[in-house]
Length: 117
Image 1 (tube, one colour):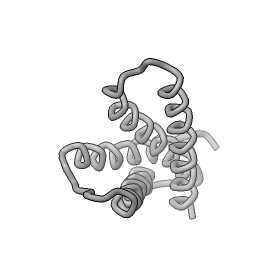
Image 2 (cartoon, rainbow, N blue to C red):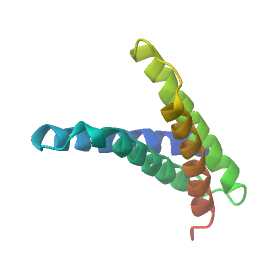
Image 3 (cartoon, rainbow, N blue to C red):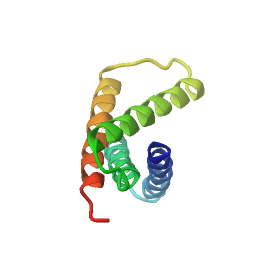
């Protein structure tokens, strides 16, 4: 249940930040070169937050639960992407996202377990 809670929080936070970023892109002169790094940062922050909140009530193994949240999040994201996008494939950018997602989840899990109740 904690993993599900962390996933839901991560996806909601991602949607909110991406919506905010799309508004900023629409009304400013920001180049599209910043889109990929900002998406990576938004994804990592969302997973970190979701894993932290999802593992607050867990007494131990926060790194494992956080890693699971990161893995399920990124797999879900890539399944949705493969359904929506034609010509979807894994590339170096995808591998970096997968690794960073797992790491962000693990760090978030550690933070969540060690937060004061």
